[in-house]
Image (cartoon, rainbow, N blue to C red; front, side):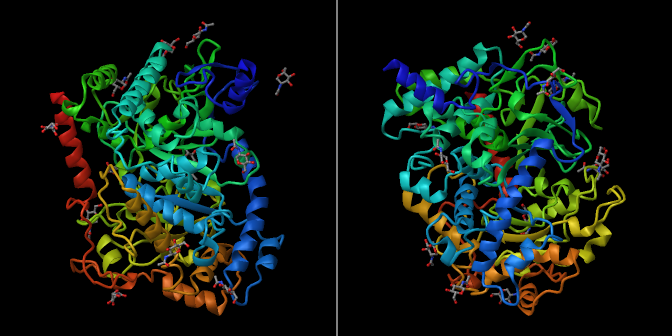
Length: 627
Ligand SMILES: *[C@@H]1O[C@H](CO)[C@@H](O)[C@H](O)[C@H]1NC(C)=O
Ligand SMILES: *[C@@H]1O[C@H](CO)[C@@H](O)[C@H](O)[C@H]1NC(C)=O
Ligand SMILES: *[C@@H]1O[C@H](CO)[C@@H](O)[C@H](O)[C@H]1NC(C)=O
Ligand SMILES: *[C@@H]1O[C@H](CO)[C@@H](O)[C@H](O)[C@H]1NC(C)=O
Ligand SMILES: *[C@@H]1O[C@H](CO)[C@@H](O)[C@H](O)[C@H]1NC(C)=O
Ligand SMILES: *[C@@H]1O[C@H](CO)[C@@H](O)[C@H](O)[C@H]1NC(C)=O
Ligand SMILES: *[C@@H]1O[C@H](CO)[C@@H](O)[C@H](O)[C@H]1NC(C)=O
Ligand SMILES: *[C@@H]1O[C@H](CO)[C@@H](O)[C@H](O)[C@H]1NC(C)=O
Ligand SMILES: *[C@@H]1O[C@H](CO)[C@@H](O)[C@H](O)[C@H]1NC(C)=O
Ligand SMILES: *[C@@H]1O[C@H](CO)[C@@H](O)[C@H](O)[C@H]1NC(C)=O
Ligand SMILES: *[C@@H]1O[C@H](CO)[C@@H](O)[C@H](O)[C@H]1NC(C)=O
Ligand SMILES: *[C@@H]1O[C@H](CO)[C@@H](O)[C@H](O)[C@H]1NC(C)=O
């Protein structure tokens, strides 16, 4: 009997942390290649090999998608199989914005997923299956991480089993009236933190947050995924068989000694193989599996390699560390003493300073000399913060790196920018501007207008294409771009903003609980936003998406667009015009809700995104100080 249980366990934990639990521990060396670091010139060998295999799958799936899209005067098979053409690479990106972003994003993702009921008939089913990259940031990284790390499950499956994303009780009041459940929840968090600390590692607030998140995202896994690592992906069937897109989540580096995160900060990505940055300030990657290893210049100090530091919940908590402070909301005065005690115990164990920062100690980039910002490389600790703190709330970053050769980005923006928590294009504007700064490094992001024009021209009311004509982007080919780079290697962007169709989806970023019907409503509304209200607002929507996907490859070969595609581009491309007049209020008539009023939701905050965030953080710091 015991033997059978052990066998089962051995199976479950394939690729998990070497301790099978939250604590990191020694693992075998990665082989002869003892230097864990590499310069960010080009893709890693493993990513390049993986993408080559994935191309075979996406080529076929893209043919299927384009056939379903009913494009006129276009033969998908001919186009994709033409040997002169290279494989088209699609990237999908989900913004931050707490559970609002996770749930709206879940609906948008569903519309792209051929496995989801109704997606092929009403949405853009199959586009996910034809995609190469899947990126998330903060709330969007909860979505991407949940889907990817649960063996590439689907939103339909999650809703069917109703165990993952159980949001009826907030993350701080996990059991609701079931106090025993709340107690065991905190007890479990406390125990896993002890395990990591006893193994000799610093525990920070992000560890608490990581374990709390894992109860919501890995509810069906052994010990709520305490031993599930980000690098476990490398062993998962859908990943090894190239049946899923390559997942990436984004965080921001904080220069040691400062509290500021701005457009000059180093942006980090965690992908299935590596963690690091393309930015000149760091310009290197480490192998994510060996993150806990104490290294100098990428080589282990005493020959020992450590695994398990890349706990999946911890990586997801890093990208969303702004929300660490949710946990400080717990009001223990109404809870029984046995729960108060364990909560107090947890809070005593973590550093109270910098509670929105994830601490990576040892710093994998310690004592290297590649990047231009030596303060990161000199410090023994690496500090990472929420990916949205630099204003780039949509994770375009991994997808605009020229090395990845992405043709088209489907960007889902669920930010809370306006007074009533709708997006206004600010995230895309931030990415546009970053290409002119010292961290540009040859990236090209197409022209976008100012936030007022986004609103006045209805660019958040319906999907909008940016960068439709690559030749108009020549002036963005920067001085520091490499010689072989061409504008045709920069992606076209299909931007879709959160918008109300069947549900007021502008809930507050800090809404902690969703009743089941609210959750379903958010997801359904996201589906409708991505599908142009199930294609009822435009029966040719899928064909127009097809036109966007094939555009760069057509441009590279000087192929003319079909009349249908020309019409689509007239309809969906931003034409370069501006309207910066100050006309408050967003008109929602195009959405099917036709009440023409500014959207309001009972839970919606009146503060705009950043104000709300900053104000909230300030309040929480005070609450913490009073603890
Ligand atoms: C590692 O190095 C040894 C000796 O140099 C060599 O025989 C072996 O094939 C190498 N292994 C790999 C996986 O490269
Ligand atoms: C494509 O055409 C077929 C047959 O006319 C129709 O059933 C299907 O719904 C159409 N699909 C799209 C995406 O318009
Ligand atoms: C749109 O399609 C989705 C998926 O099939 C469905 O859940 C939703 O109810 C549909 N919305 C409308 C307005 O029909
Ligand atoms: C993961 O999904 C694949 C299908 O892609 C399936 O074959 C496999 O059994 C699943 N593994 C687990 C552990 O559920
Ligand atoms: C490392 O960063 C911490 C926190 O910002 C700072 O206090 C410390 O001085 C830094 N150490 C070095 C060697 O720069
Ligand atoms: C970023 O760095 C550049 C050049 O060093 C500087 O001109 C610019 O003001 C900086 N931007 C911010 C937001 O600090
Ligand atoms: C190397 O350091 C690790 C902790 O970082 C420790 O567990 C291990 O015992 C050390 N090994 C040697 C050979 O000193
Ligand atoms: C905590 O809960 C108690 C009892 O429910 C209540 O009186 C008190 O105002 C709450 N404190 C805060 C800070 O919410
Ligand atoms: C890493 O190793 C160095 C030198 O061996 C040591 O000084 C440092 O404390 C170690 N860092 C951690 C986090 O263990
Ligand atoms: C757009 O959103 C930003 C916050 O993300 C806000 O500062 C700005 O005022 C907004 N502008 C408009 C025109 O809504
Ligand atoms: C990016 O930055 C690195 C490091 O500064 C540099 O070596 C490389 O040439 C840059 N790449 C481009 C395309 O500018
Ligand atoms: C934006 O949409 C509203 C409502 O449909 C419409 O009245 C207005 O003319 C549109 N503006 C532009 C520039 O298309």
